[in-house]
Image (cartoon, rainbow, N blue to C red; front, side, top):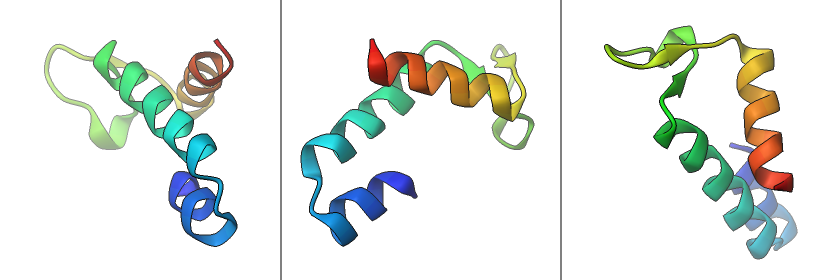
Length: 59
């Protein structure tokens, strides 16, 4: 994952933590791409998922 790359390849631990937190927050809101979709969640495309994660990361 990108967070693992930041953490282990570049030593950017804080940034990796922020990426992981942003992803967790988006998943907690119920957003899912088709490959991880489950009942009761909102299906979004990869662009929308990426945008949501970036918004959380920057927010």
